[in-house]
Image (cartoon, rainbow, N blue to C red; front, side, top):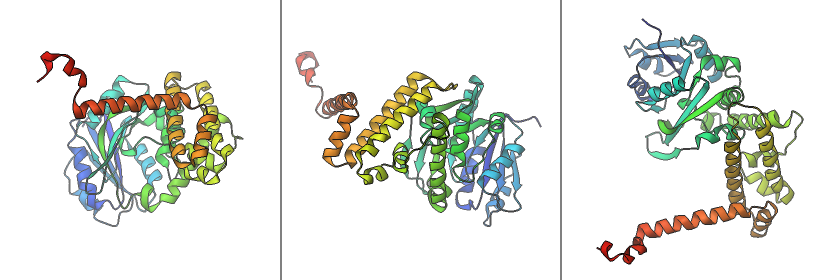
Length: 356
């Protein structure tokens, strides 16, 4: 049997209710030249029996003797992989039929790219639509400093690149940690289309059972990222750090305008350091644009949360009028389009030949 071109790596832990649907979404891919590396991490339900019920030569099942946790299990999978390209999959999500083909084709066209994500469609446990996670692909590098836009089961990465950055090295927020490390040394990419349904599960580690641990790890990751650009001795208050993560409650609760303004001065300083840091993803135009939109979002959210006097003071002291004018113009354009959609284009009556 020839060596496959892609490894699909899927850890499993008590995933019985959704496992079969997740597996079949991979086994029915239009791109068929892959190995399906499944590692059971000590499940106590029928997960192993479900995997073993499939008679497909592409499936390679390994069983941990005891529960090792997600990072150790994924690192084991990377070591066991027989291919350079590794696609991640989770045992409760659904990959679209063309996902692997589109990611494989992209990686072939972009040999310098080490990490590729896609948009994700977020659904409930019973697959009801919640939202579509869609972000500008050229903003990913900048925004990975402050938050993780990439959904773990949408990822395809290169094995050698992951090994060079020490693979998964945190017990929680392990995906964000790996993605950011890869982004500091290699090109990253994103396919601007949804290629996976991401299921919100009641047994999710990062959103439910280990939410506090993941929240703390995410905060530590962001602080590490900022210090990468600003220096190991850089200090930042917790409310300002949380504001940069788009958690605005702590800085609003301080009621301290100096602390609120610090959110923007710190953001500007970090952005300047990012611009000056050599990086394969460091396109200045994209970085400045991502900074503009992040700053605009922060101003809008803080403006809504603060008392009116403070909100006006914030806009004045951050020289936000260009942003406000752009927002007003965007709002006006949207209202005109909506009016035309509802009542029709009033200019049509100027041309009698077009009146129905």
